[in-house]
Image 1 (cartoon, one colour):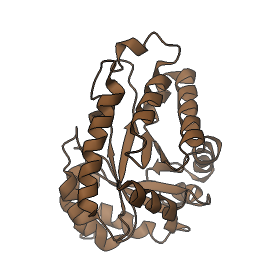
Image 2 (image 1 turned 45 degrees about the horizontal axis):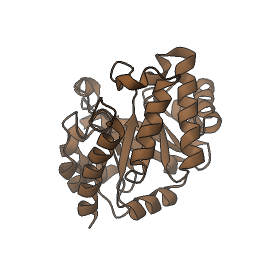
Image 3 (image 1 turned 180 degrees about the vertical axis):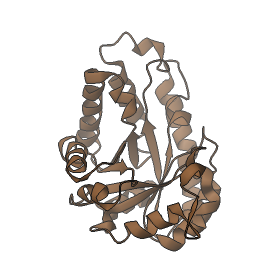
Length: 270
């Protein structure tokens, strides 16, 4: 999916909501556990109930890898269901991959070509030859970690190198890489005070913003400093939506939580 197509969806739905599909068997409604494929049934119900309120879904790959082959089959079934039934939805493989060129090329092909995701998250620590293989794939996006929402982000990301914070150097350097127009960036919602600085470096790039909801991020603050003329934000909520209820009404409860965020987004866009 191109950036223009994503922007069109945002304008149509008056939403820049991304929903994280992070299924944990310990948290799934108990009535699903008797089914042959409880993770897929859970994902399918969430998608069917919320697809009109969001523009993107983001499966966190760890929540599938942990279940081995069955988990990967659930991931494949989920992405196939999305691509076949809701092709207008933007899909993100939250894999946080990053390795030397040949390995990154294989990761890129696995997520963007074989599984058919629109984008994949990557870690930039190993530099351009670990990211450029992802960027080379046409009409796909690479979403690079820039400033994350976890406590440990301050261990490295905000440390200064030659009197400049490391995350700023990462952003500036990434703009020089081949096909950098295909880059998006992960910026945590709990770091809202940094958005103004980030926008000085990447004024138009889309930012994937986790941390709204359960992690304590504030949507108003994120939008105050992060919104662009073309929106430029995908705000993710995972646990706050998909685990709104553990009962048989879980999908409806998820839709209510998603609707609350979408309504807030619509008001901001106006």
